[in-house]
Image 1 (tube, rainbow, N blue to C red):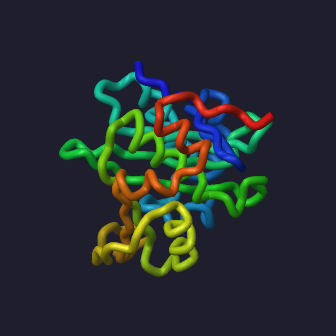
Image 2: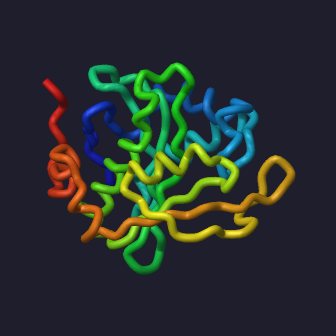
Length: 201
């Protein structure tokens, strides 16, 4: 079993999904607008429940490749979004995936911090060298999120995935461990070092 510790930043924290997170998970994945820019199509309730069960099983796989975590506001354990890290089967690489925040999430505007915490965990305890991420080329607001996370523009992958009945280009970004470490905040430095980040007082 490979459970991640809670990863605490200045404006939010990440934790493993729990059975009680089904309702917000289902709300995200069955929502027409929230799934618009994801690499998967909007799900019906049954498919969302199946996907949630697969996420709950992730800590029990070995080696663990997928990490789908709940985003929560400081001092509140309620899930208000999700983000994931997919460790690739070759090299020392991983991909950030599926950043989604509920419309009423109190952490809106700080989504990049979820990515930074996962990158700190990847570059620290997981020993990764390179982490990349991408967004649909027409989702231009995500550029600022990527840059704030410390990712650098890299390429455009043509027609990478097919959703909503058509193919979509994806703009990619990446970060390398030696460079990214230099920009880490104290909370991220704690995660890099392999320690459980402290909750704000």
